[in-house]
Length: 116
Image (cartoon, rainbow, N blue to C red):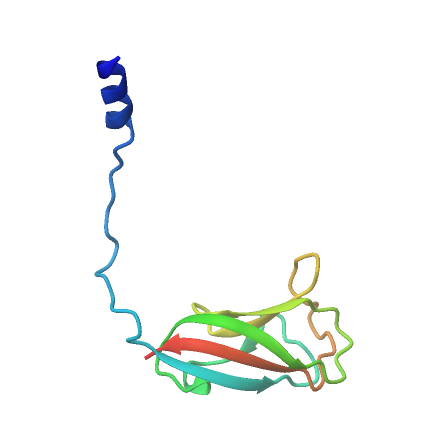
């Protein structure tokens, strides 16, 4: 019985690899930026640089909220900031990206970003 329990304990050991040094929480700047969309959605998203968000580099975004739908007629359900591409993307319920040239006139979003 003891050897059975011991074999169970041995099987639970995992191997880990640290991919980066630990970071102290709170070392990043946080910005809140209101973004007003132009008339039509651009395929692949709207270019939005870290400088546009008040940062030199964006680590991640917490949330992208709809502040006002404006006169948008494009079907959209949520928005996402792609850190790698530096683009603000809109998605519909499918969940696929909003169609190229979808009407998003006056759509206002708030982007909460963290970085340096």
